[in-house]
Image (cartoon, rainbow, N blue to C red; front, side):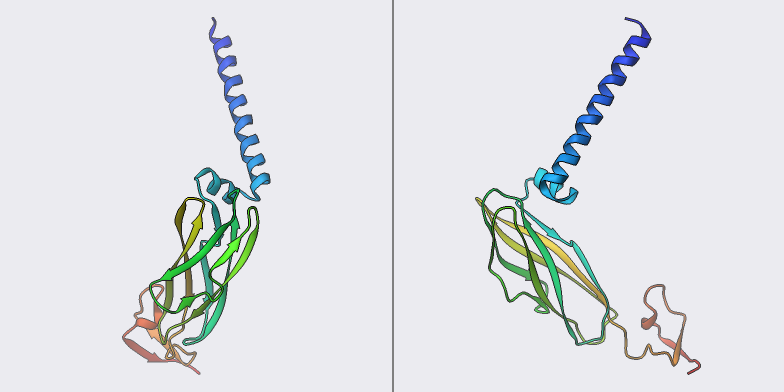
Length: 176
């Protein structure tokens, strides 16, 4: 067999494999509602939670807000969100447990209470999901920026580190 024939045979195999892969990705994405859901299903997960990281932006200290997570059941049977855990009592849901029928998506609202005078808020919340034959853990992250009360427009910070201007030790009076 000549080199040209071997090259053509290899090229046909590669193109055929690429076409099959694209059909799998496009078909699976359509079937499961998105590429993330497809990857979760291929990975053996019965649930898909969005977003994985929720940034609430800049919020005032000691305030509360509601974060919404979309939970999709990828299994052929119903699943249940039976609980959640976080490293503090500042993130919690009042609607757990919740049953999710097969193929359906529900919104789960989570209450977030921000601490007093901190420059950032970063909590990991773990949803406990009762799947067919197992209890699975799905971690998500909730973040927010909390401005320090001394970082108003009347002060300019001198010698602050990048990303944490309110942690500077030296202050210089700025224009009002």
